[in-house]
Image 1 (cartoon, rainbow, N blue to C red):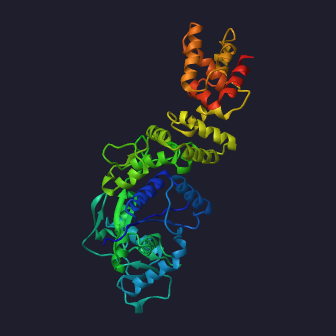
Image 2 (image 1 turned 90 degrees about the vertical axis):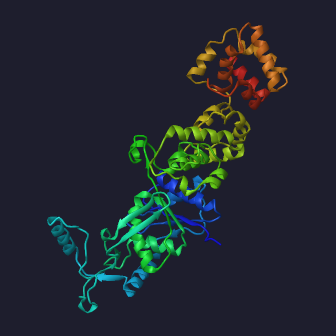
Length: 466
């Protein structure tokens, strides 16, 4: 029986959940969840100066919005410092690491001399094979004994085999002079202790893999499966940054993108399944595999995100849309809807969600059902009403009073009225939209009438014709 898959997402809590981090989390979540495995969350908070509880909260909120649930408790890397240090001491006891008493000044002098002679500046400690009898009573760091010859091969599921000459690896510090463990040691110990089988992360960590493998090998631990994914670039091909627009996952929630659309789009950033662009979570979970990840950086394209978001809004259940729109308004700092407005919105959803790419677009179309009398027309709608002559709306009212309130009957009544006026229904539609919604871009007149009901429709027409 094969070992269950365990993946992890391990962000540093120094800010929001970056869009690149959100995609890394998604890939780990898809890989684990699609195989009945575990997806774990570790906060790499060893940098106490830069780590904040607010940033941790923002990361958790971003993951929550994206629907990326994790197994077990959130693990703090800082809390494991004693365990990390114990592993360094164990390596020291086993002869796989050593105490180095070289000072910062001595290391700097070594590098300067090497540079002047055109030699490698990779520091080689004179204490590596020193007799412990010669150790001074002075501060020291603990360094790992890197292999001196041969090569280290990183077998990567995305990048292929990456070979690094061992003479390019230094004796990495494991424990600083003050006894605190370094990040590189903490990552390996945590991944081992958490039972992580697959490390899926950005390819900016690729070089770290060779150095981390030294610790795995020295401890006799199994090396995880590596998968280093290319970074995300902006449309101009440069690394994604603030100049390309929003960087935080939650900013996209506040801009009104549905979580399902964001998941779909992020999955397609650097991973593909044939020519499929639009897919459900169930399909992503079934299809996602490491061999579908490309080697080239993905380009962030807002138009594609909008397109996919619109497709997801169109197929979402009305109640789910209502729930997500309520959360969007809170995230965007906008006034909440009343319960009645929410109910009305849900009733109208069938005629709102087809062509809306974002929640602000959907809510703009929903203005007719969210507003209350008297409906105040915007500038364009006011012009449409100003062109109405001979009390066209008041003439229409009696025809609607006796109509049975079904789409077919309303179409018949309105088209018949237009004919009797020797005009086309299109000429009527503008003033009707303006009267019912106070806008010129709305769902169809018939849909608005059906959602509003007979009395509200007649009242709005009366208001506009008075």
